[in-house]
Length: 274
Image (cartoon, rainbow, N blue to C red; front, side, top):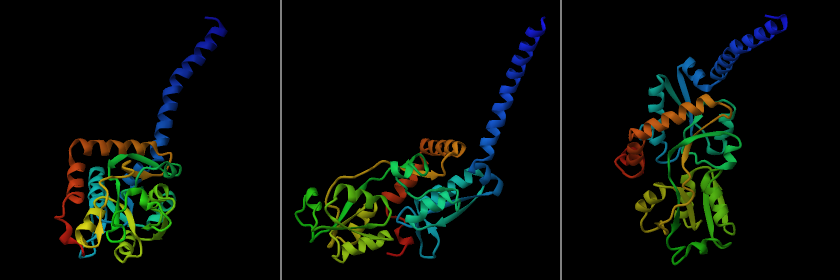
């Protein structure tokens, strides 16, 4: 073998053996930077959420209960770690995630392009469209287009999806913003706003509580794009794990069963203040 051929063979051999080593090193680096590895190392997953019924709420003893709490606890159990829930104001929940104050958001967050510019979303683990909840006497005889008027006032939670959808669907209407869902509904109850929007089952539940004052006037849902886990950008290991966990729990029927319990039934309502 000539010197030239020998050098070429040596270079080729070096490349062949170096490629798997480089790939393994790159994979290890990606894995070590994942929040999943951090969760495993610390033995706890920190979940950011915002309080709104029935996704997450306080029971009569002040303990957190709701659909998100079931999801978060099952996720932690399957990971073999403890869980810490971090209640956070909705309008600050994405900045708090990006800042590292918790590992993932599990809080009924709808997938939107605007949010996706800042964070990554898993596959949906639930689907709940928005419906209109109206003051019956103030909106008697209204068609859907009648809500798009400067004479109509909507109330909504600041920074939440309904506020964005109201502004898009009813741009001529006045929009009052509040920090909590309950405040928006109270404005409608008090006659200070014509309507609000919220994800089911909240509108239907409020209608049953106040049948003489509130109504769900349209059998129509808006923006049923799905709710997903939210995580910091660039973590493909976390995205893979959360997507697979959701897929497994969907296939087993567990997510559907828990969703039906919290969203289609009222067996849990005696656990919370009415």
